[in-house]
Image 1 (cartoon, helix red, strand yellow):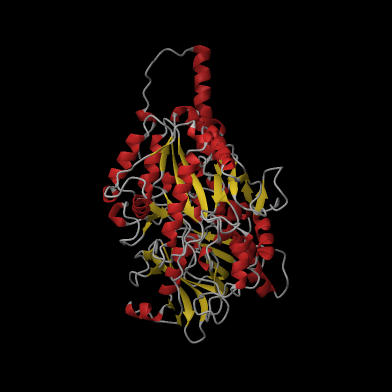
Image 2 (cartoon, helix red, strand yellow; image 1 turned 180 degrees about the vertical axis):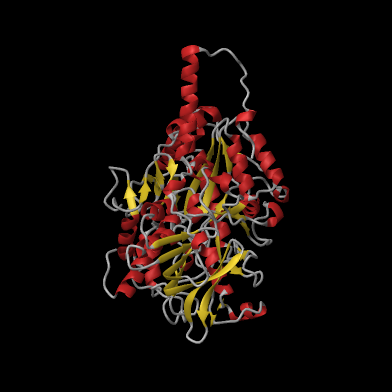
Length: 623
């Protein structure tokens, strides 16, 4: 490892003596001391992996420590008589992960599974090898370790639709109480729809550097007839919203830190890191899950679950593990010589929020404050404030309906803001997404002298569906991800995103934004040059090139009642046809929510914990 101290050079030796030298050393010591707040290992549970032995027995084994897994494990371990084991394929979160503004610097590292979609002629054409990158957390805390920390629950209609499909107990009136139980909102002015006593810290972090631009965007929306939203679930849920973030005092508050680290003293809760689950062990005669096969430190262990195995590995890993265990589409499993224990539609119904990252707008420098990156580093390491303490202006959103055919929005705009002197943020974002190098280089040239924003038009209710399958029967082979982007028969998804770009063009011409001379840039897309710039055909071509994931894959272990042939789990999250096995994560969503999926995933984890507790204690339990 490089010796950082050896690389430091005193460019002006001898100029600091006496008191001035003391003051300077005090400053340096303060900066070095502040880094101890980041990646603090004492905030997390001890690693039990070295103590595990073949044949060890627990009441519950939870696979995955992310947004849902951490929460269900927390709830189950409230019962002191139950031994709960959490298996996580990754290790402890790095110090870098605690710095909100550097989240994209974690993509592509050892803390990321580094998944990519399969090439297609319909989407991801502007990405290397025609593959969109799908970062997922391979780390204690899962994807909550490097997501945007945004906390939004979705709309009443989302959950009422789930219930209408036969999923009793998943309507909005029921699930909203489970949300409140996980929340610990730090805003004294928050409405009573938010909880105050849960484990997840929620804060509204001040937007810095981009506050003038955000003010102008809010005014632009008002100019177009949209109001400012104070809550998530108003009667008319369109307009601008500044969301809560899973952030405490400028430091990321990931799920493992909140739900496992806060209860690390519980003697019945065990967390095992670098523990790669090969498959779930199922008794073929009784179709009962009995434990797991897990690889730890080069050894294969078989661990027993007396009561249940709970699969909370996310929308990619959960269906992969089910199929490796013999639960999945019969023909697909047989083609890989995997013994079929249950023919089920695992891996189907893959839905994701598509986001267009091809609308890059620059503004005149007057729109925004300008500070050097060094200034921001100082602000952060001394006070955990400034640009690095936030996810930029990504907690500022606007919701609108491109067709005015519903009082619910069909588009959510995310804003990726790059101030002057911070161009490396844009470069890192584009590289982490897997954008072709020539497009990255071209974009960097554009923004050298002007602040910029990627207006991320996000499709909230996609009609396109994808599918996940196994590459082989080897657990260490990454699964095949067919995103399904722009595969709906009527091309409606493409049309709605085109309409959203037209909306942004009009928005930029409103007086509040037009005064900052917004310029929508023409990116390096040779395949689109045959079309007139900014024509419908040009934008459709651009969308097929530069639409990617908002990191919200869902639905691959779909929830549905008995008799629903498209469902993998029932409303109690039990796998159809298999005893003592449940799935609790975003993969169970029958329809993707109209929101970022972190908060709904935590709610799913908590509701699962309550349902499991009620079954095994044979009594009603507290939410």
